[in-house]
Length: 554
Image (cartoon, rainbow, N blue to C red):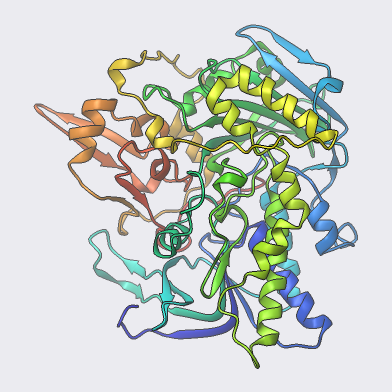
């Protein structure tokens, strides 16, 4: 614990992150307290400038958790307006597309009853519901460190300083971070969170689990012509432009006023360091199928973020002394369904119930570890949802896109008939360990962007509404400043130049000297560098609160 004297705020419960899980937990806590006439103070810290600004998802939303949390959500104006009316699954070749009859798809892939929406807009609405119940939400505050007591129990967080310059000195606008203390802390910071990594290391939360696996997801929102728009249409595809050894696929969702979400996911266990996920996404949009859709359309927004894909076998221990991991901090995504918000919300609700009961018992018996939460999760529909697809991601890693998809589909069909195979496959390698030396892999020649369907990184991130003061400490830390040149460039041709979707990393060559330039002001907080760096030399930490993208309608 730091010895610096700071201002202190005290609450019963602190929640780090105003995403689906964090807000669902906050709402559930207040509902339980109100139902039983209890006073429980709840604080939510959000690093983005406003709730929803860092949220990016497809998104086709399964409302099962929302139905439980706020049954009258429709009457309360939840931004879920477009019902899924049609599902389509495509296999893409370079110039053609083949539609797979949907009756061949496992039933769990059916999206009937789900809604196409902006998850950022849903989170903004959830934030409003939480504040109506008395939850205190503070946007623009990044949680930088965990707080521990003398027994090494978590007792809250320290927020980041504001107003430091690039060298770490205090400017005229300097404001010291504060201590936010609570009896229980729920960490809901999303995929590959910095506090989660700290807690996993300190408490050994990953000792019994497989390495977490990740994907990098891209999304653009376009406004298309009325003739091309089919409200409620959900399309997914595999195949071109990715080869059989590189996992991933696309989504296209029609919703709203002639809006289409176009997305592309690349699994980060790919081997070729020459591969650029961003350029694969741009190339995907030049397929004739996409050109037809986007003719005369306007690109409105762009973003990218990492996705937790490991499934049940990659879940860490969910509880630690004084708190719990919820949502994508733990990893709740159902990979074949490309859905996680419903599981994230339910995990937050179950954690809230465990915290509430612990607080009620506190007068007679302190409950340092919230064991009721993981026990409840294992008996919930979340566990069933993830268990049914637990082997799909390992099969994709073992057998590639085609073999893995076929074998995973067979297992999902078996689960539809209540047949559960008696084994759970493990993930053998972390994604960064899958990268092979550049000399062993083919160079990929990507076409130049045409400015109509495909674009470069800088013009894309201009649509992400980045607010990032360049005169602040760099939040992308290098453990060893020599590694980017001596190892990454020498052995892997500096893959950070290609896996970053925002042009943050550049190799600058001046005469006989090369060095890595970090354009931290471009960062859109996807955290891919923290995941895919071959030597794990790059560490992502939150920048000054309020920095990063301000996604609208994403």
